[in-house]
Amino acid sequence: MATERKSTTGKKRKNKKQSWVYRHSLGLLIAVIAFLVSIGAVFAFVFIPYSGSEGRSEWIFIPKGSTAAAVKDSMKTNLGSSMGTRVYMIWKLMGGNTDTSQGAYKVSSGQSALNISRRIALGRQTPVEVRFNGTRTMEQLSRRIASQLQCTPEEFLEACYEVLPDSGFDRPNFPAAFIPDSYEFYWSSTPANVVTRLLDYRNKFWTDERRSKAKSLGLTPTEVATVASIVEEETAKTDEKPKVARLYLNRIAKGIKLQADPTVKFASGDFSLRRITGKHLAIESPYNTYRIKGLPPGPIRVAAGATIDAVLNAPDHDYIYMCAKEDFSGYHNFAKDYATHQANARRYQAELNRRQIH
Image (cartoon, rainbow, N blue to C red; front, side, top):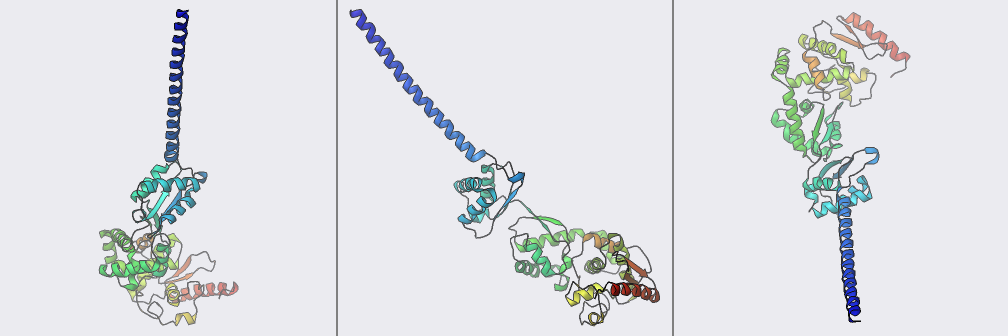
């Protein structure tokens, strides 16, 4: 009997020990699972990548003076509520502040919340592309620049007045300080920095070879840009620009008034004009080349580098007159004498009347 009681007691102790081990093992397993779940949740929170709509990239813009609430709204609006909230929370945990983070950030599909937040917290902006082709006036140029960067048109113009005169540009010649192209800037770049960099690019464009060609024409780089601006307004046909350029160079060399219709349009301030009449030719303006001799005070648009090269490399010919072709193809009839030019002009005028273009 004593042996049986001892055996029974031993079994109870063994079962109790096994139960304790089981309970603690189960508790440990639950703790491990909970830990792994937590790790998984953290991993998902931090590392699951952003998936843009149809794989598109999005931009987050943080203007100067933004509040943290505005940053959060921008993130949620552009990245979606869930991803935006996630990025904002990590950004805040990293000590993100709006002063350091102001700028523009491109978020591409596949980037993790941690990566996005870190870049923004450190102020590692994505450069934005800036273009300004086909601008006629400095006001138009300033609006184009301001629409792509964090500045106002007035701030850009003010920067031009601060930077350009020290490089020899007066107000009428400001357009000659720029070459249309595709540029990269940080969205938060100061206007002065933008103007300085664009001027540096223009100065690099004017190589010793180009300056030498301008000198052989008896022109400064700014004067070449002025001729190029007239050429661009006269024709949109790339293959015709060198021919048009030489015509104006011939007139300059002979001391003949340029009598360029685009300069009259510029003087009038009405760029929608399709027909230049006597009242327009009578406009008193230093830009009216029917009244003044030589070049106008400055370019009538921001001329492209390719057009400047068309002027510098214009092929020789003897034409001094041109008139739009009556077929409205965009090309011109050229003439060496006034009688031929008059005949060309009459055909064009007749077609204008037939089409009732006033």
